[in-house]
Length: 458
Image (cartoon, rainbow, N blue to C red; front, side):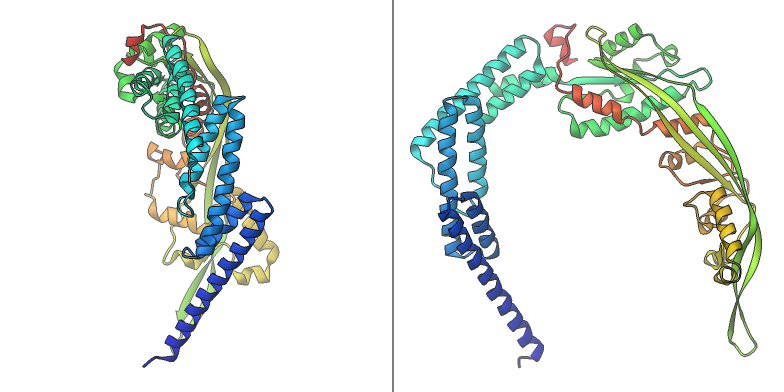
């Protein structure tokens, strides 16, 4: 027996099919009209939309075939005309036309003109020969990066052209650029800061450039440390940096320095009463809710730190500077502490109760303002009480809190502030962006070479 719901479902499904067919038919008519007016691309768009709605519509498929054929004919004429003026641009258009045909295959079969196919093949071979010749010359001139790009282009026009695969592979191996990020120099007051910043930058650059750079690779920490001495950690001269880069088999070295760490401290207090909701039951079992005022003192210490960093990208081939920047970064840390230990459900505490706000809005506003002044705009009472409950009775700073500082935490629950050097590291840890951009710009640039060709495979 067919239920009422089943009948409605069947009717709805039939309606959707009819609607889809009607939409497809309308799009097909519009496509035919656009093609008649000479707008082949718009006709193609409408016909393919019709087929997306109704893949089995023969009229839509004929419309797509007609529009596609018109596009291909016009494209072929353009390529013939362009070949007379610029073979390489004509070859680029051949590749684009091939991509169009490939993508169009799901909608229509676009026949290929035999005469055009012969001319297309000749154009592609001419382009491949041009880029192949450039690549060979660039390899001889010790410009492996550009050689690889041009040889790859030749291979794209004619896969398997001559010995292009072998040459491209050789060019790529020579083109790989190993970049060593060595410890930065830092003042005697913060000797480890330069090492820590270089380590953080090396880690972030390794991840980012692996996905974005074609030739640039960051030398790993083990190789850097293996080739350095204790004396190197305290700072190196420019010549020493270049020699160290060669020793590591790097083609470029990042050498930098950390400036003076500027620090400014502040102290804030919140001394007031907060509200706690208390529920009691009367003798008859009914529940009564009342608010009680609970005194609390919160101490907030704030430290603002500004630090400058300068780096230089050096070619180890001749010691030339490939890029240099200097900039500053700042960060702040707020250490919040209270000896108040909450009882029961933390959700029963609120900074200002509705009853207080209604009875004395001026006082309610003053409490909220005082809290924000001490604990910051984003730290709530619940956040602080939750941190208090989770913290040991004597919470002193240690470096386990550093990841939270680097991530920009609103506050850390501590009795003391993190040292200025750790905050400087927090400010600079994620500041490798300018260096990353410089290395990406230099990625396709061939450096001069101080070694014979075979040595670059070290």
